[in-house]
Amino acid sequence: MTTHGNGAASSDRDPTAIRAIAVTVDDVVTALEATRRSGRRTVLRITPPFSGRMRARLHRPTGDEATDAVHVDPADLVSNPPPYPDPDETADRLRAADEYTTDRHHERHAAAVEEWRAAVRRGIVDAVALPTADGPHRVAVKRLG
Image (tube, rainbow, N blue to C red; front, side):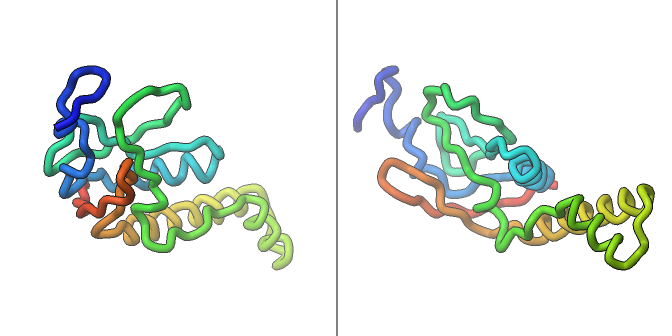
């Protein structure tokens, strides 16, 4: 058994010990939406010590973190994630149909976002490959909420 620089046994820090991750459905939706809307990466983070069943929580990496945590891209947790609705495209469709008003634009775009969120919720996968130093490690995905 090897140890890491902090003296912890590698079994506590080895993500291949994970057999399943539990994710809150809303965390997956929020992480994917935040990434798509802002362009800033938002992930589901799994922090050591690692064991068979782990919880993945919403996290926005800063880029300067030195950690053994595993970051899961929310797009990897969704089968064929749909493109995020673009407000300009919604406005263009309304204008093309000669139906544009500010209120109608807001209502149609809000409805499109809700449809997108529902599609993401329905598309959460049953398994995902976690990135590890030894390559991808496949684990089950358990939905919460």
